[in-house]
Length: 160
Image (cartoon, rainbow, N blue to C red; front, top):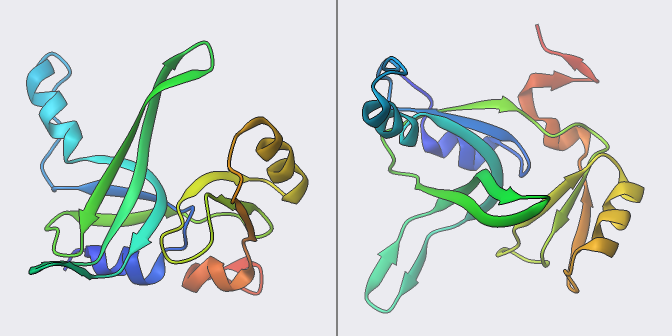
């Protein structure tokens, strides 16, 4: 049984690289339209946000998570940022490709449950330096600990 979206929501720490797939084979590059359609259901991104289920009026929204897929821009200026949000009911196959390194620092746009990862720095000094160049007045720094490493890491070593 393929890993479901619930596993990402429950087990993957913010900052992880997550791949998703619909299980279909990649078409040859010469079929540009088919390849573009395939890529929308088969890609990867960095986990930047998890949101629990919530209600809006009479509408009930299920829990979901958001991945930052790619940025488009020129000369270091980002013009378009692509985020993908997946419901826990998604039928896609999800795999945690990489977890954030222990000691790295998450830069979140604000505190609380609605916080979103805006940068993953290698250490606290790099996070503070990044913040001097980007406008996030309510940013929160959060160090990645061994607890965030999850089941793949045991006492600093990869589990066999």
